Each structure stands twice: as structure tokens, then as C-alpha cells.
Length: 154
Image 1 (cartoon, rainbow, N blue to C red):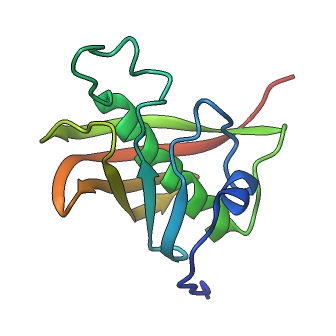
Image 2: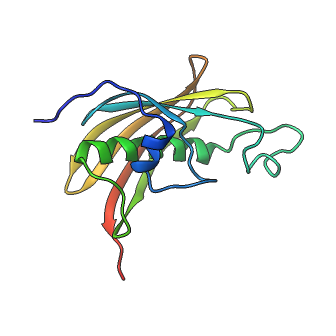
């Protein structure tokens, strides 16, 4: 039986369940989560992001691939919490595929991205998700993603 929670996580709790660190942590807060089902997380986009000086300096736009990465990081938190596990130095949570990625509107400094990620299925250690990123209620990006937890070869 999968237990259900409906709670938020602050950045300290997120860092316990995500292997990424600055400057590549792309979620700031978890608003809600239902283990084994879905997560809603927040990414606050600021002008201080390390990619803005090089990604259209006179018209800063968050790269679409980083929006998809933010969705994947939310998926990773959901997966680790669902497995009741934490990242460690013996394994890595890899992207296995990205399908149907669509970018609908640009994301700029000052925007708050709401990331909603749902687990579609878990089969033989491969997790499949559907992610939607929104700003002010408008979809800015969406994608289907696959991830897998793999042992690190030493």
C-alpha cells in the first residue's frame, strides 16, 4: 500500500531528496505531493540565475531544457519520497528519455513556475512521468519523461 501525504517541503528537505546542488537545483519548494502519484513544486526565476548572462542578455529567457530539467527534478523528489529513499553516492537518477516536449511561452526573470508532475507508470525500474510547467495559470512547457535509478560503477 502506498501511503499518501499532502504536504509542502522547504529547500532543506528538497536537498535531502535531490542529488543536485547549486547552481543546478531548479526547484525551490514543494507545494503538495501524493506519493506514487504526483507532485506540485515551485521554481522562482530570478535575474541572478547563472544562465541569464549568456541566454539572450538583452532579453533574458529561461532555456526550455532547464524547464524540463526542473520538471525532472520534481519527479526525482517524488520518486525518492515514494521509494522512501534518499540519493547516495552509490547510484544516480538518470534521464532515460524525453518525449513530446513542447514550449508554449517564454519564461522570464520574476516568473514563478508551477511544476506539476504525474507518475504514469513504473516498470522494471523505469519511471515514466508527464510534466506540465505553468506561469500565472498559463502552460509554458510540457513533456513526457522517463528516468531510471542506476548503480554507479566504481
